Image 1: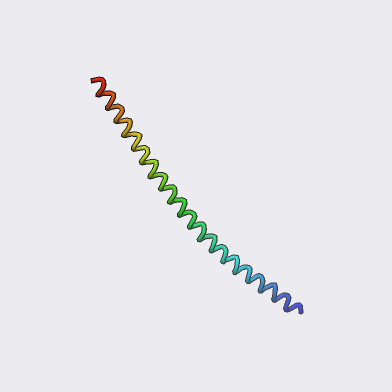
Image 2: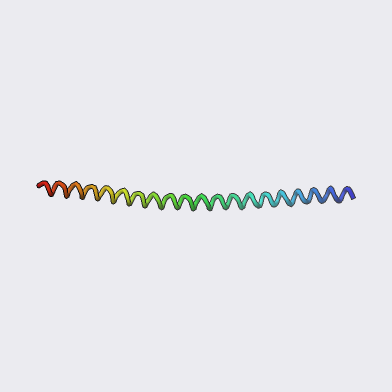
Length: 72
């Protein structure tokens, strides 16, 4: 009887370890997908910010140009 209970403990431990490795792999995949998503979001915001910055610069140039034209 002792032999079977000891064997069961070893098998349970082996299954748990295998399961643990499985979940570690799934966690790595999930983390990689999340990182990829966050980088994509960051790049999207960087493009939007660059467009807004360019619009602000262009509008400031136009305002300066309009002011100089009115003074002439």
